[in-house]
Length: 187
Image 1 (tube, rainbow, N blue to C red):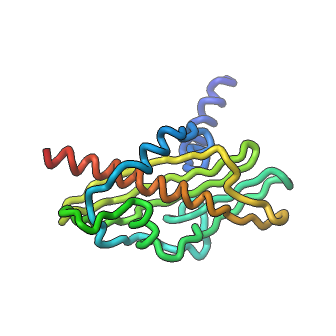
Image 2 (cartoon, rainbow, N blue to C red):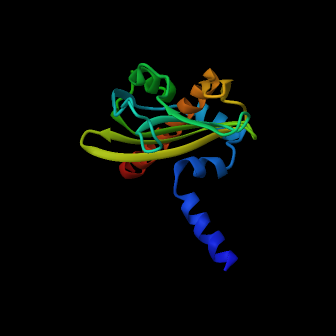
């Protein structure tokens, strides 16, 4: 009976992104370097899907979930502090202005999570990459073992700038995932 309760609890908790990121493996330094050093041979001509939430929740399209146990449980959802997603995505991915392949990127989901005890920050990114009318999807998860937030008071936390590096890395990894599908089709 106890095993069945554990099994049901496991399936319930494994369904939400915040718990999937919490239990995900950390992205190694070698994995981070491989993503950073991958050269992208395409030009991004447009970025869409960067919705700002007014009542942010776990189901928001682009959201940051802060959680902290230092002062009791603090949890909150907020917009990811990026003002120009088009520029941020192009810079993070490494758009090549001289490339012959032109793509459009639609942000399907950006979920950023920061946590303490243990300190980490993580990002799940899902993108749709369009080459002409063809659509290719990519996704990634990046999790870094460092503090990604600073608790200012019991109900106020701010996102450390390093956390946006993980968002950029997750965007690029998702783009690489989609672009790999493009390359497989063209072979």
